[in-house]
Amino acid sequence: MADMDGFREAVNFGIGEKSETQDFHVKGASSLGWGMKDRLSRIFNPRTGRTVMLAFDHGFIMGPTSGLERIDLSIVPLIEYADCLMCTRGILRTSVPPVFNKPICLRSDAGSTILTELNRNVLIDVEDAIRVNASAMAVMFSAGDGEQEAVTASNLTKMADLGYRYGIPVMGVTAVGKQMARDARYFALASRVCAENGASIVKTYYCEGFEKIASSCPVPVVIAGGKKLPEKEALELCYKAVNDGAAGVDMGRNVFQSDSPAAMIQAVHAVVHDGLTPYQAFELYEDLKK
Image 1: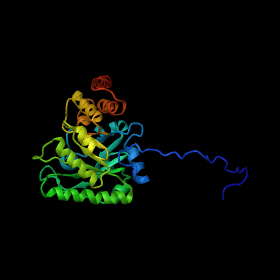
Image 2: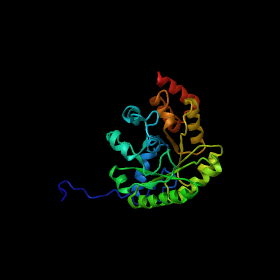
Image 3: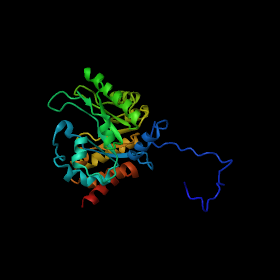
Image 4: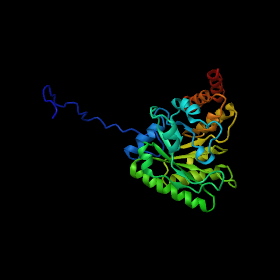
């Protein structure tokens, strides 16, 4: 029982004042449960509604990619500058110190490598995502990839069901096969299908007409960095994407393969959250690089 000495009766009931309601800052998430919103708020900055995700899950299909040979040396020094980390459970447990208090977007499917046909994936146990306190689970969706379209769509819907059960958002990652056109029509279809099947976030690629992709997708779209670009071009990519409706970026190679990864991720952060132009961001990169 609470100590009743000095107890004061409640008097400030705000009678006659309208109850305040708060619009949630993440697109399409207003009707989600508290746990889902809490995790999305960790990923997407409430001030801007955007995120800078640092992706280093490449090894699950590529092995020790350039820049990811030693996670402890290349990635750990960058963690403080990222809003969210996207990685596999193996790298998380072996190489990411649990002291940064950063949200984790956990790669939650696996099954094939670059040595064979991609996208023949199965899901990891959702309980493992719970054990590592994941804020989101990333699952591939491969639209237009023959029989793998149905397999990856099934993976996505199953993980979305589990995500709703345990309050963990799912990020649908749109795969691009060799025969698929990298255009707005394809990416809009793939992104919308991810959202329709329960994804709370979609990761896709920037292209001409991206504003149609972002507008027609009812959940936040973050862009993949893709292949390594010169730093100024990568910053221009970020700038165009957020101005065309992206809710942020999920960059890997354009950060950890940069000449100065720490400077690059800070410049990307300034574009996404502070509205710096590509020119201003590149100047910032050059200054930090020195």
